[in-house]
Length: 130
Image (cartoon, rainbow, N blue to C red; front, top):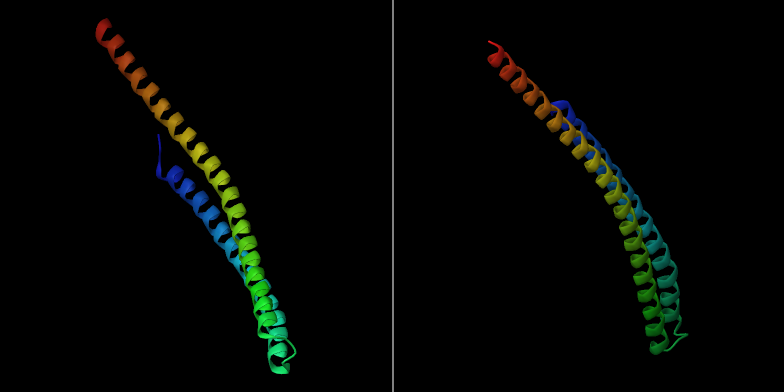
């Protein structure tokens, strides 16, 4: 029979995976933000020096800013790929947990059905012999 303990066990397993995923995604986002900030600080310092020193034409500055924009896109793309990888691993783990839980539930249902049939069969035998 399916009891509260089985259901709570399943819930706890899913909650544990969910918490782990949230932590992994938070770490991945933090790493992405740190990489983005470091890149921006370096690149924008260079652009500022170019602007203040009038060492480069506006076209060269815009080209440099376009490179910065592309680097931002690359960092974001890497972060998204990392998040997708984390989520794909999680889906596999959740699928395994759900499969185990479903198996346990089906076994409990079948055991319960067998017990009902045994009682019914014994009852029929008792009624016939009386």
